[in-house]
Length: 140
Length: 140
DNA sequence: TCTTCATATCTGCGCTTGCGAATATATCGG
DNA sequence: CCGATATATTCGCAAGCGCAGATATGAAGA
Picture (tube, rainbow over the protein chains, first blue to last red):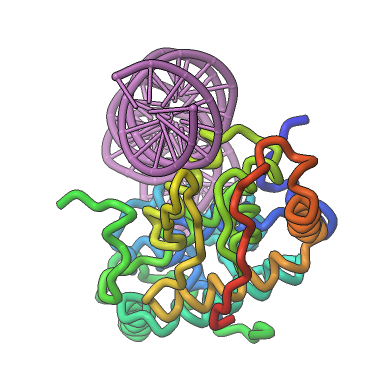
């Protein structure tokens, strides 16, 4: 039987290493940190991480297939948000990880850059007219 | 500058994704679970995981380079033990992960098999004369 | 020194992953 | 329908990883 990351979402056969593979990349950790407590659209990731749009999309797709984020389309824009895995242990580890990430200087810097980009989107050509990130309540 | 996993041990430039890559494999998770609270020699891993010795050695080397385990030679035998990373966040995530692993049925089964192998090593040809695992105190 | 045992490393192969570049899809306004 | 914009996917390549099998190293004993 072929085994893909997206099949690991059920409680019974979830294996932790799927989660860890998803977390084992700096770009994805930065994305997750930004996404942790707000719904945010792709163009902001591109702007904050100062990287290419396909790269961001690819990593977001990876996280989506791993069941950690979900997306929602609103017109031209795609909004991404965190989805806590059903598996209790995975959920705990993910929450703990996000909590720790938020203490890291580089991660704080990303969030700060996001705020300033939202306050002055006219400075960022790509962000003009883009829907602003929205803080959400998660059971952190 | 070349960047290798073993360089990530210092507090300053430690990146979490190194830890996550080390955890992103089922064999390594099983090894870590067995190693979590005892010092144990390679031949037991081979016997419990029912896999090849080179495979076990390779994964142990991977964990060693990631700074998660350390080894000690005693005559012919190599003993492996857990080493909590210096980085506080990595340490916490690792401890939390190990705690969770211990609740998983497959992981419990491994530990049970280890006990029975230790109680009756004469049943296991490869383990005759091998030094028995020793429980250790970690700051879990 | 020769042999044996325990463990580590190397070799070659296939699979996965990450990347940039190019291209495709989807939505919107005209 | 057409062009522009936002995002996703595909392609080709290079690097990394996991594996089995073979070989090397290191320690102990005859």
